[in-house]
Image (cartoon, rainbow, N blue to C red; front, side, top):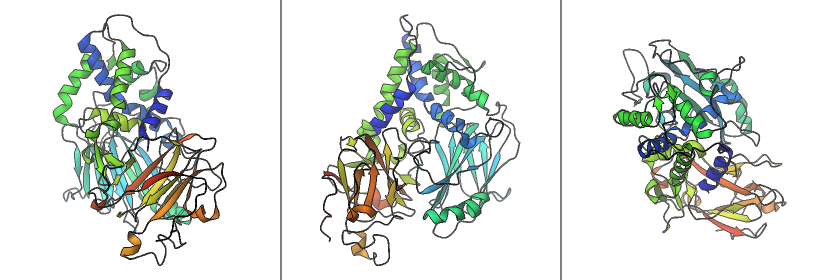
Length: 489
């Protein structure tokens, strides 16, 4: 997947014209401003997430500490988040610990069904994940504000009866529950039986002293026509009660923000004399853009050499600690990413842009070994699902994939060691072209009119074989329209 393409599209949406200071910049304040902007970038995605009708109540304010259940699978009109899943149902919540702790109730898991309830801090760190991959038990989990001792403890707290404790470093946060959907007929069961069993209950103690999480706090009286100024104004409102995840880095971060003009006392921003916000913004974006092309941030995947697939290092996936540049990049292009114990997102690292006027064949050299499920999903250049007559946006282990001889990849008769290592294929071809009948089950529609597109490969509940070089990752080739099926093996 070309993450840089998506990053550039998002920048085009973020950047608008604004005035430039002509004064000579003050080096220390200028550098601090660059760092502060990098630090603050994930707030843009948090505000977008909060502003959707997903978590807004009838009074047009935020409905905090309550789940908003999505009752239909994501489709081409879904705009709540970029790069949405198409094989899970979402339940979202804005977490507000300003008035006290919150308890999340987890139901008993249905045998065989994968789910994950990740709890994020304000900046998109996946501080804790409760669910199948962590073998979590049913019960109540305490979510508390602990800026000096953040973390995840899934051991029972006998004295209080909690199944575990989530300690957030920030007073505001988010939850994006994903529940595996087997097929379209499974949706009603999840909506009527499973989703209602997930609940959030505010305890209203102990108070943090922070203001409540409201639409006014995140949206009102910001200079929205000046992106860097608006972002620093927003950061100044939330910085006091939403410090860095790593307590050991909080003092340094606070000093940097103060040098950039953030006042913790007045919770306001004042542009330091001589600071050039335009150049600081440009420099901050440049730093973030370097993240996906830096080999030091990546783990090569697969058995081929050199590897054509990679993923973000596990230590930099979902929970970013002091790597604010990586946090910013993921916050802009893959907001609310899960940590690597829950999912990995292999990226195709060959320098290549994908266009819908070209047909591509993806060869899988065997079934990916996952505890949960896997899928490959097509998106347009902005990170949204591609409209098509079949309403088909992804293929994976619950699709009707077939081998070249017509045998189902995941149906009866497709088992045993030979089947696990047998090749199967997907065809990425534009909706402008009628697909050949031989390819119908394995076809993923790409956009019309030659537009650029992206794809995401997701492995939920990844096993060690997917990261230790054992599994041979797919090969992608440009081919003729409706090519002959490869020879059956």
